[in-house]
Image (cartoon, rainbow, N blue to C red; front, side, top):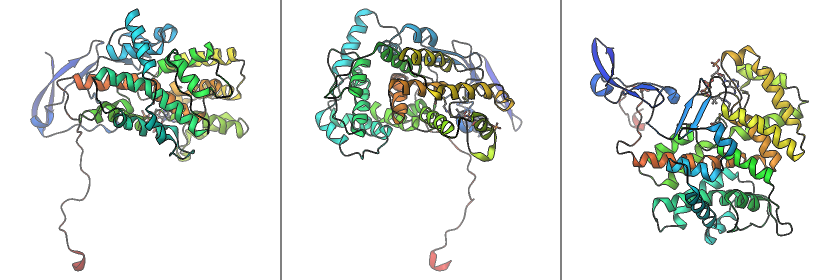
Length: 421
Ligand code: CMC
């Protein structure tokens, strides 16, 4: 086993080198403190590996993203979301009978407990659907306390999350909810529950179903991102899968993470309302005092391009064309991208469009309202979160996540009672 040597205060300490299957290397600092009394400091964990994982591989320099060894481009081109979910969770592609059974269970578990439905009535109509999704996912074990085997819970979560999302939407617009059908697929059920009304049955469009399928696949996992790390951190205390994933949904909601897709659309709308002067907003993003960032730009890991953004940019053109939609926001987005990519500020900092830059324009073309965009991201990321939660729980070396800190507060002070101060 190769090791790294570190000399601190004249003392030499040795740490094992860990190498991944794609040649990524790390030195294992687990014994650093016991050997030297030092800890490592890495705000934002930009250079910290928190675990070893066999789920997703990213090479940020080359723009590579693979789920369980399969290129995202291949999966996006011809896989279906339930199949990709199965792959992430079970570490192999399903054969025909495994896939049929998986799909059957996903459909059969789509119903939401009737008593749980009552809860939706008590959220104000202005509630953000992400808040409702978080609350309802963490409440699921209360309605299904029988705690059957883990596989059943996984299916339940995947199947019911999309129903929760659709019911939250229906309640927010004051329409009666639509129950899932047992002869519909995951995607068709979701679309019907979102858009059918008692007056008009919803006709499932293949273009819309395929576009949604693609969007969910490109969001399905992304190794140790903020929400997945949150799921792992929460689950490391042996909290339930539902509790851990509910915490992950909260982490996803922020505008620097999953909330960026909503923020991108709001930014593009703001530019349009402001006369369409996108160059002004590029300048604004470069001005540190403005507090404004180009939403949908930049990524901690990708430093050349985000492969998901490439897939979605192409899909965006195709979907809008197939649906016969001309969206001025798409023109603004393309112009923004072009100007930013040739601007020194963005070039030097290696800032490129990320997955969220074009996703919102596609969701909008599919008729999905802006405040549901991050919920859609959550539905896509669900199998990734589940796979990570399960991998962590099955890892015998897993310990509770408990980072350290460098304390910078007051040193010891003697307490003086208030009447003596
Ligand atoms: N617009 C303008 N400047 C930016 C942007 C941006 N979108 N992103 C980063 N920068 C600048 C930043 O000001 C900093 O400049 P300097 O070195 O001069 O101080 C430099 O680039 C590095 O930025 P950082 O904030 O240190 O980078 P990070 O790795 O901590 O943050 C990020 C990554 C994605 C949070 C960030 O790029 C960002 O805020 N982007 C906008 C929000 C967004 O689109 N988020 C979605 C991420 S992809 C989907 C997901 O998985 O969540």
